Image (cartoon, rainbow, N blue to C red; front, side, top):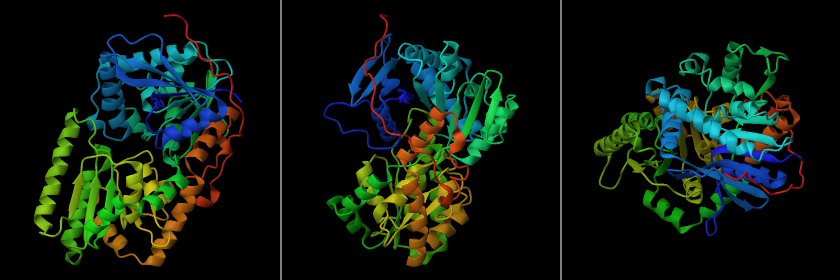
Length: 494
């Protein structure tokens, strides 16, 4: 089996005395790398005035974790600048928030080229390369320029926007058009895949088999929809275990028999938290009989507080929380509990399990794994109800079981809250069972196996086109098992 080289913006390097990565992408990557042997390369998370030309390598469980520092200019231009103040808002349809500068674009391309230079030093001809997310879209271009003909795949974890939006990206022919240098480009949903297909056609790509295989002058590129999953079995088991803990018991006692609505989101304008609070206020205004019978818990760790847009949003949410609690609260009841701190995945699993409603209403999201975690955490005998934005990638898989809403329509979200809180047990069980089947079958390990199988085979058509829509047509080839290969990694002297 070919060695696997993974490149991402950040690397989950194992550290003595610290718990292993808790979930998500790190779980899938570590599992694939342990099976095949290989390297995980990316930014260390540290900033240095003079980054070393030789990355730091940590070897553990058949994996070389290889990291490099960024310079202060790299951090500002590549990461804070172009990646997070241009690509992030634009890919989430917030063109109005994109702040383009030539210096930031130059830094973004420079760091991608430096990453390519590092990877080139240890890349072998038969290695398979898997590159992740919007930070590194041009990376394959720089690897190809260095003569590498390896199979290189790319997975975009955030949405790929419509043709009109992506063309609003300044110098898009240097950035997003570089996706034509991959053998396989994976996206979250069929909608993302269709958007990318239209963009490839604009770039002159010719679809040659009617199944999203595009021919360009120097290569053929396959586009595939590979919706990301979670560690379903592990998360469900964790939720069952923590539900008996003193932490969950104390939270439950503090509810005094009231129903619980929960939202868990990083502080970001794409998550729709202010709109969600408006909807909860509309619900309280229209349903006086629910006063003092329901509490909305919003857990929102702060994010990018140094960016003005995020600071403004934090102020807006704090003000809205105070206004709603002031207008509707009582001495014995606080309608909204708003918390700006992180909880462990274990603690969140327990909170999800006890919540009657999971409120997941982003304005735009690539997938949103909170929706899948909420489903996995439920007690099948007495499950809660998922209210889900139609603009979350998870809606393509869970739409038959969740209550789908337009997060911009406060009255509709308020009506969905009432319906969810009053939904009969039989309907709750039926809806949950359908969603749980999907979440179990398309877990994080199946996702990684399907992508790597398609990349290694050069045939993304192995994945069923309707996976993201109907549970009955999910499937795909699992990667075969195999032993590792030589672990030694070397770099030429700086």
